[in-house]
Image 1 (cartoon, rainbow, N blue to C red):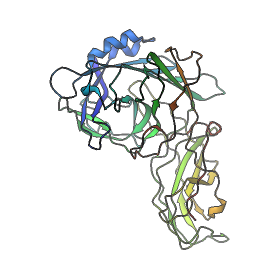
Image 2 (image 1 turned 90 degrees about the vertical axis):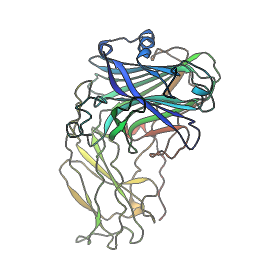
Image 3 (image 1 turned 135 degrees about the vertical axis):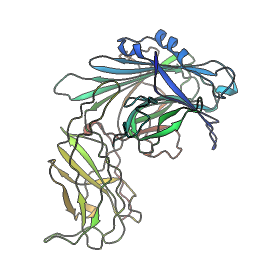
Image 4 (image 1 turned 60 degrees about the vertical axis):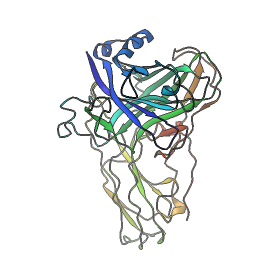
Length: 420
């Protein structure tokens, strides 16, 4: 019996300003959770569970399959998308498949937010899809898996992403593992309620890639990301305020302009993504009181099993350099606390003495091959765009958004202070 693990979202006229949207349940097969080696044939059979009729009447324009697999060391999702028609109905569309791995999407219990509230860090989603732009939808397959590596000296996980299609035209492919808050919404296909992502505070990895090759054959893109098991970002923005200078304080924060603060969790040298920006703070004293949150286990749940969240053992405080708005430029290190007990401190650091930036870029390994085997040795992809994207969606094309930080030695960043 199929269960609803998420939702299918289709936007037509996706290149235009006005974008009509169609949504329907995303069904997956319960027995498939116990498969250990899903195959393409299984997914082709599963597509019959999700015929998609964008217009709401007549014959469906496309069909979607979704398979969930789980072993002792790996959880994986496999997707298959196939157009059933050609021409205008499947041209210039944006198709997204959202799988909620925290809650089932539309059971009586999970539709009751009093019984099933959104965790502070948001609900976990795997997102897969494509935007065709001026071209027609073509058959598309996707694989997203998380493998727990067993080497005790490497407390990391390995995320593997494989996307198969005909990349002879520059269509966008979409894939992500993110957290977002949700609210009740209504499927346009049947009028039934469901839990829908509301954003815009995505945390995790979200990529929109535009392969610009010319191969008409079925090809595969492979992305492998090694990431630490770090705590999720602190959920609450810091409440900072100007205070009189303590005895002996140099009080060097500029007395004009404003600045904003963020905090991250640290564990085993690995750093989480940051808290939301605080409200911009001004000071006439050269000092600002900054609260330092203490780690608490969020007790997250998962429809595929329990989540073991490692505790934070240190905290890092960042702030933007002084500017008129208080939000310009990168966040720069103010201080690191090598404990989980300190609850506040007074910041009196001059802009010129701020430390390293909160890094926002990550290197990933991308390959383009003619095989779907993730471990296949292949040449590097030509013409694959995987660039940074701003944290909030401003309609920019291409790139990726990354908020959950992997090990710092695997990052690259460009320091950029705001105006003095």
